[in-house]
Image 1 (tube, rainbow, N blue to C red):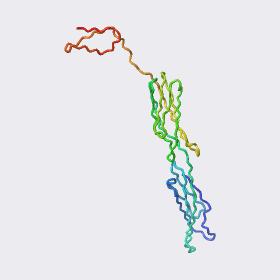
Image 2: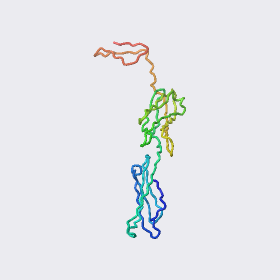
Image 3: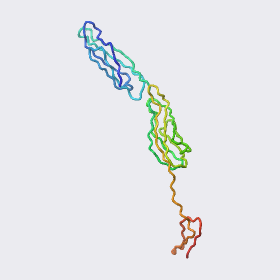
Amino acid sequence: SASVLLTGISDGDATISQPMTMQVVCYNPALIPSIGINYNSPADTARVSYTIAPQLSGTAKVTVTLNDHGGNSFNDGDKISTYSFNIVVLPVNDVPLMNPISDMEFKYNQPDSILVTGISDGDIDAVQSMAFTISATDKSTYFSSLKVDYVQGESVAKIKFVPRSIEGNSTITLKLFDYGGTSNGGKNSTQISFNIRLLPFLSLPNKPAESHINLYPNPAHDEVNIDTDIKNGTVSIID
């Protein structure tokens, strides 16, 4: 919330003190959804307090009305004065957004990808272009390729990478930029980090090929079924 101090308030009469009241109206409730005035007659100051809608900017006209309620004393009606001013809300770039990514494990030397979701420039009153940068600890050791594919306006992106043939851990840092600048305290970047652990493929031990296999046919069908991988050696069918 914010406030404006009003000063120099008076009923305008030097010989009599009159009770005064004040009212305030804002003509842009979308930008200023709540506004009020705190005044105790016959004080010479008052304070207008208001709240600004989040993530919006623009101008709101405010009118303050002062009534001295002097009609009963002078039989010429209450005297009312009005004062107007503008509340100007400057644009502030909100931080861009993306969802966090958990640590992951992958097999090395195999191309793979990671989906990045929840991408947004963070602003509801503007549409901005965005860009990514990506880095990794010991990048050249663990990756032969590491990049981000992103299409402007989309809420998702894809990290694509090719791990090298080495087991280990690498911390990935993904940074998202928008082009809204940093004026008035704005923020134009955010980043997330996560770990990738590279693991080797696990393979079953090779079974030595038998040098000779005896097969016995099925007597009911006079058939021989071979269900094995024979690379070397011989096969005998026994009657």
